[in-house]
Length: 146
Image 1 (cartoon, rainbow, N blue to C red):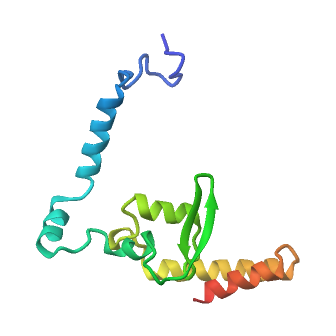
Image 2 (image 1 turned 180 degrees about the vertical axis):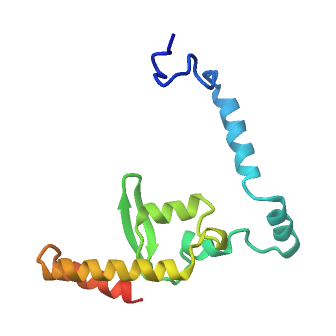
């Protein structure tokens, strides 16, 4: 007999349903996960040098005093984003909350150049065909040229 939720052959769920957790237990698990998200090697380097564990995100996560910012808005509210960055509030929130953007998560420069070329070509063609407003298309082309 096939299980109604698994029509492709298994007769029971692969993983039994998890028990509901109390808020206290959930908070403990989340704290433990947050504490273990930085490797022991990174923790040792930070303790030894006093450096930030995520130096690549420091400038993006919290704009320093004296840096001009703009106010971006998303579903969670308003957030200050440096004016020299092209991203919006959601990306800024991600930089603040998650360890992203480090050397291990970067794509090779050749891929970024390829993306830029493809975006520039698509913007130019769509502007010529009248499908993309000139003011928006010129900004895409300028960003791709960087």
